[in-house]
Image 1 (cartoon, rainbow, N blue to C red):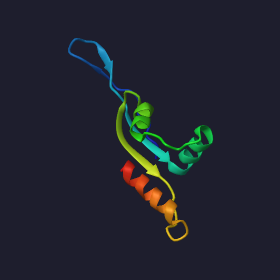
Image 2: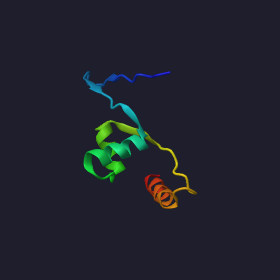
Image 3: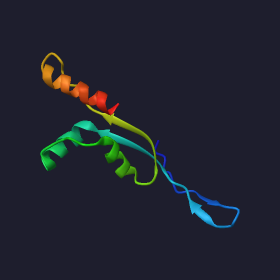
Image 4: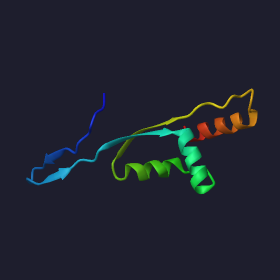
Length: 91
């Protein structure tokens, strides 16, 4: 089920209206983002905190979820180790 959050307008005691900030959840396809950054910029280094703040603008960031496929430790031990360090850093 998809929920569409619309701005809520509240009347203050002075009679004016103001717009509440929306709540934002960010879902990141890690593999897609990684390869897009490498292709576009030659590097996949990114400050996820700043990236998420830019995406949510002045709204309220509720949660960030990062999805990726794990690297096989037996087949690619160096890449596995690098991926584990990266995942720990964004936790």
